[in-house]
Image (cartoon, rainbow, N blue to C red):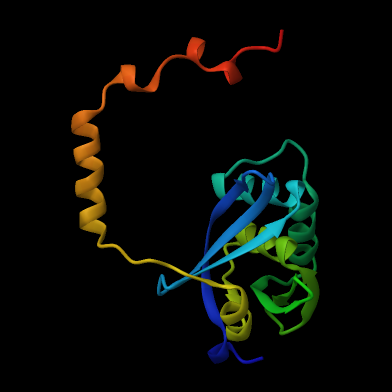
Length: 171
């Protein structure tokens, strides 16, 4: 699969999807036209979020270990490729700087790419099948709406921890 065929994606972040409580990694094509949501495990989602936030564990986690092994062998990660969607499961590959392709789950490939600063790319067919169209709004209008909101809001609108049953320990 040649680079010219692939669509580069930006890893927007990790979210929990209510009410199913699924963990989803959100990827956006660089043109901002399509969003690719990928459901991942809790551990993988946490790993991606931690790497994006610059949080490092006191001891290497699995994805950190994988990066260390690749680098200790004198190689680097060139990119993570989301290559196919089979029966609802995303398939991916880590591509090393020497062209070697390593089969991977999409979540693991993304976690490694975030750690190494490597690009995440996607086959156009996958983006066509699983991507969601993004509704475009003018950034300036969003800023104006937010400023209008800030002009009308005050701290009392948000309540306090005492008003939030979720902030109290169970009885």
